[in-house]
Length: 246
Image (cartoon, rainbow, N blue to C red):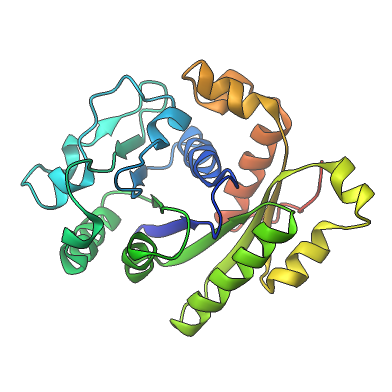
């Protein structure tokens, strides 16, 4: 059975969606069956980070509620084991039945090794919909104090909801910022109160890849962010990859 991973952030601008796309493509590059679902209803952009903005992807609403089979999900042109469902644009998050969503993901577990849910930032209805269904939670934060405070709050809410498989990914890390603030990634982890799954350095190639409508791991496979995503992807599979700023 596959695993459902929710990619969350307390604050917008942490790069949550690029992390989701980077991990999904890294796992698909290893031949694993991966499904990405953009759950940010009304503000979808996971297709850009995946390099699938030109694809005519069905929304998860059309598949989960509209009778289309899961096999109709858009397949990535460069990663044949990666499929994608976009977010619907013409419905509200409140009109999505959590039980239908949960059942559809149960079916997806039988077809995919990993199902990524790119949740909207914050803790509104989209957050709660995703949290009902996920097995594991990847909380993406920056190193700045506002982002870390928001991440700590999201972690508290997940704990109150009985969620235990929660870990932190510190994204867009600027070494000079950490140095000037006399701060380390361990400090971020301690403040958020969560175990660390990975660190991703600030990397202009992430924005450039999106601008050229290519997945990062194809656009700049040796860049810092691409290396970090591959390490985190292996860590998600249980391999002993060290966490470092390199």
